[in-house]
Amino acid sequence: MHTSTPGGGSLGGDRHTRDGYLRWWQRVFRLTTALLRVHSVVVKGPPWRTTVHTDWTDHLTTRDGHSFTNHGSHVAVLRWGRITALSYDWDEDVVRRACVHDARLGVPDATAVPISD
Image 1 (spheres, helix red, strand yellow):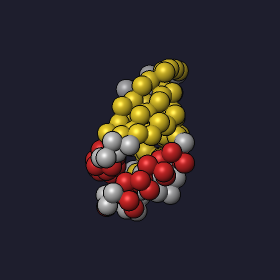
Image 2 (spheres, helix red, strand yellow):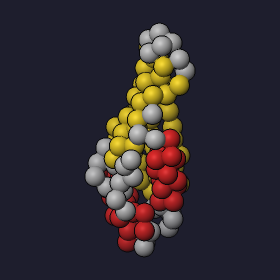
Image 3 (tube, one colour):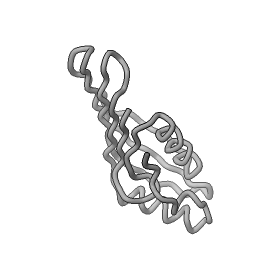
C-alpha cells in the first residue's frame, strides 16, 4: 500500500508499507487528539478498481488544550476491497502551525523528519 501526505513537516511524506503507515498514525496521536467529521463519501468504479473520495473537517487538540481546525480530503484506491493507495490533501499551514505549537511544548515528534519508507 502507498500512502501520501502533503508537506515537508513531521506529518508529510510517502509511505509504501503497512508498518510505515502505522508508525505515521502513532505519531499523529502522539502529537494531537483528532476528532474527524466526515462531510461526504463518494465511491466510484468496479470492485477491481474502486475509488473512494472523502471530504472531512478535523478538529485537532494539542496536549495543552489548544485547538486547530483543518479541512481536507483523502482519496483511496481499492482493488477487490483492499486499499492499495491512499492520499491525503489538507491545509498544510494548519498542520504546520499545530506542529510548531507542539514543538514549543517540547513534543519531539513535532520536529521529527517525515516517516517515509
